[in-house]
View 1 (cartoon, rainbow, N blue to C red):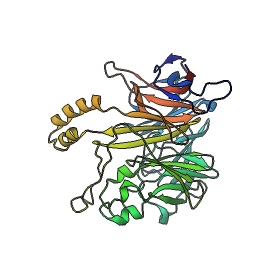
View 2: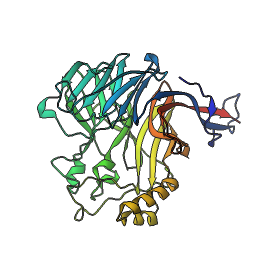
View 3: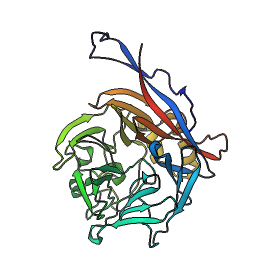
View 4: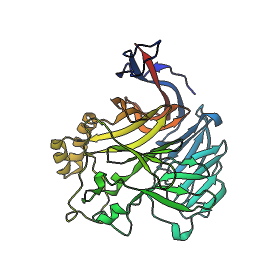
Length: 390
């Protein structure tokens, strides 16, 4: 690993402590800072997606989308193993995993797909599999990076489980009434159990048609509580982690310029189409790091830019428009307390991507390539949230 020790951001925001002690002034200002404290650089020609990192095992995991191969390294950037699996190979897991692969130890990688739970060594030899019973197999969407992760909870695994199509389609109220956001997976049997309906107050319960991708849940677990945000619905929902998953809180999020998608007239929507409209806001990742919640989101566009986006007719128009709005509407990060109080809201710092994980009370982000220089490596940065007093 490369030690960097430079300040990524100077003072971002100041908030006031409301719980002073005898040795601290209650009005003393506290500064939150994001600081890059370490990095891992992997010599590699190609584009990698970040999946997992485990400092205790000296391991990091990536995925090459073009080659459809998993790449494991140590934390000095040395490649230790690579493998890919054909969709129909006897030891394969299907077309794609439901979430990023994760390390079980130094030499074992776990993947979960709609077909079950699979364990491989670093060279791709199948060590164990627990295949989902055929009558339980469903067409869950997948993800090749750590925007979605596998969460071990007790003797089960917890994942996001987006089904873009069910017996109902997006133009029917029943699609939203029966929609379940998360999945319990038994790693011994491969059995999968969907659970957690949309909140009754969700924007998705407004009798309009919504793109299924905007319902994608992001979540994290702390002790016996489940923290969930449902894609384009700007609320933090907190539940008990055990059935019947009693709702404890529903907290409105104070997101900067967040454009809520009201949905489409069901009579005009194409029930077969699945798309995504970037002109509306989307919350892609929620994670807990130490005593903080971290949210990554896009804001969507102002009305005039949305109208222009929806009128684009050519690839050239799209390229020009995308170059302009890419500078105007940058992804954002928000830091909250575990009670949902906003502490920090900033544009995503330069070169940090939107794929990150929380490990040992620190964050690891993918680093975006330099657009002006051809690079032959892929890098992830360790970022810490630090608190200081004036």
